[in-house]
Amino acid sequence: MEKEVATNPGAGGSDGASSTSPVREQGLEEVLADDTVLIIGGGPVGMMTATVLAFYGIKSVVLERNFTTTW
Image (cartoon, rainbow, N blue to C red; front, side, top):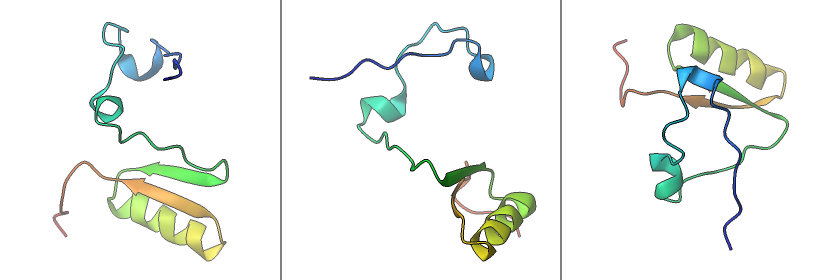
């Protein structure tokens, strides 16, 4: 039995037209622990943020759209 997830049509500029996501369709959805920080972007600021958080013992996950970075 699959549980239904409520969507927030106002988040991220979505108009709510599509209720499914490619991630959910492929079964790749994963839940982060409550004490994990999600960092969007693996550029200099995102990577420095992850480094500082790690220094203080805070877990983080960095999401980057590109396979590689330019520097």
